Image 1 (spheres, helix red, strand yellow):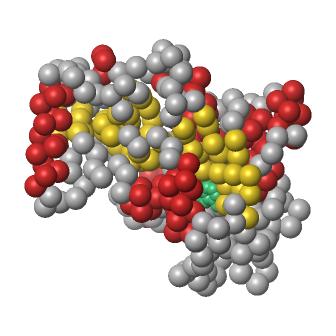
Image 2 (cartoon, protein in one colour):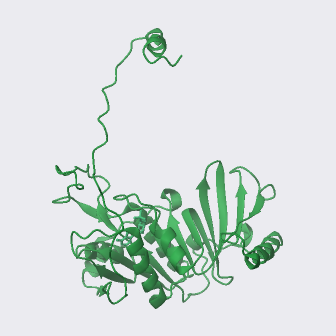
Image 3 (tube, helix red, strand yellow):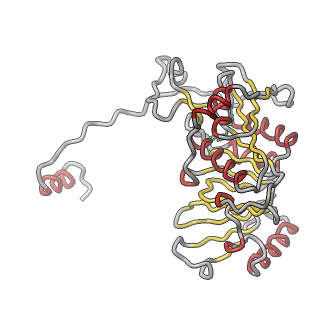
Length: 320
Ligand code: AMP
């Protein structure tokens, strides 16, 4: 239930210079502390999660066909290239005739899961989406990219789906599917919540590595090392499996689905599991009061000289 060891270091520090810091999520748990200390000394001895001994899951050095499943949560959102328009009644953004796509961070999550499977460290990638009937299109994209199976949890069109409901759905599916890893995007670009991964980890009481910029999985030792970009450097977490990971932008470059795979994905079966079957009520404790556009920026001015700039900074902006 906790991330075992955090190695925090400056990006240019050598491994020897890196400082190891014990990290414990459930403060006050003596047992956890002892476990942490044990792992700390093991890590020092190079037996767990040490960089040299890790196998890069993306690097193709797999363990000969694992049986681990990776579950990936993929959300259908307004395409990142669309300039969203706020509805006149300020109740939300215009969704009619707007291009929808897989959330970009979910594409990265799926790509990472596919690389893990291709390395031999996992045997199956299962994509899951919670949403209206059109979410099936997003799942078809996931299948075309290479997911083995897809599960759609249908919600009536127009019903808002918030992170806690999605997290409860994922927990219920995880209890059924028993994946070794659940990978999610760090955030959905429509609601920018950045909550679902953390919530599902909390509900399942699994360790979490959020904003992953590098993932190394050791199937034999049943641990995954997650590198995260934090202020002032990189933080490395060593998590026991099963675990939850959320993906940052620099983790990988997602592949494109090829035309033959898009065609093949059209005939694949997508399993439908209703929220009721999972004993989850899709509801929200949130109410969106109003959505407004950001204030318009004033036009800039072009100055002809540095002196003019200094004058403006001094006498207009009064910052000098
Ligand atoms: P959020 O917490 O809403 O910013 O979303 C973070 C991540 O949770 C997304 O990138 C997805 O991986 C996952 N997620 C959120 N909503 C859904 C959904 N309706 N269906 C599937 N996955 C979702």
